[in-house]
Each structure stands twice: as structure tokens, then as C-alpha cells.
Length: 117
Image (cartoon, rainbow, N blue to C red; front, side, top):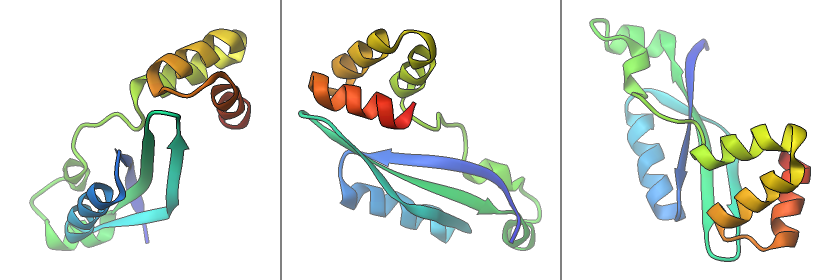
């Protein structure tokens, strides 16, 4: 199977994420791996990566570009991208940003940055 585009779908609850994933599956996409969970003290974000099956979409939607199925998106929330960028040179700033945006406490945010950046 050949994939030509990936997307991370995120949601604050599993039922909503399940609905979104099933919608993409009906369009010929395939979930890749398991659901990732980012846990904070105030919120939880569930993330599932999906991919477009290029060959399936070529057969089913010969007149459409299969990349359009996933549409425009940001693979992760903007603040997580910024946290990862900051963690390279300014780990404390990255931890503070993650705390502010996610609602995590200091220990949770530090552990997340240490593990994921």
C-alpha cells in the first residue's frame, strides 16, 4: 500500500475522534498506529494519525487529487510545534509555554517536554 499524505486528527474526546476517523476511513484513508494521548490537568487531547491510500483513491476518485481528501490542516496544535522548537535551546521556555497552553502543571509539562522533544 502506498501513502502519499498523512494527517494527525485531534480531539478532546474519544467519541468525537472516532467519528472523525470513521469519516476519513469512508473516504479511503487508513489509521496508522494507535491513538496518542496528551494529558494535562485541565484537558486531554487524543491524536490519531491517518494516511491516504494513493492507489485506492486513484481507483475510486480518478478525477480528484487524493491529497484533497485530507484537506488543509496543521498536524498538531500550533503550540506543540512551538514547544518542540523552543525545547531545542530554551527548555524552560518550552515547559512554560506548554503549561500555559495545555493546563498541565510544572511536573507534567517538564516530563512531556523531556519525553517528546
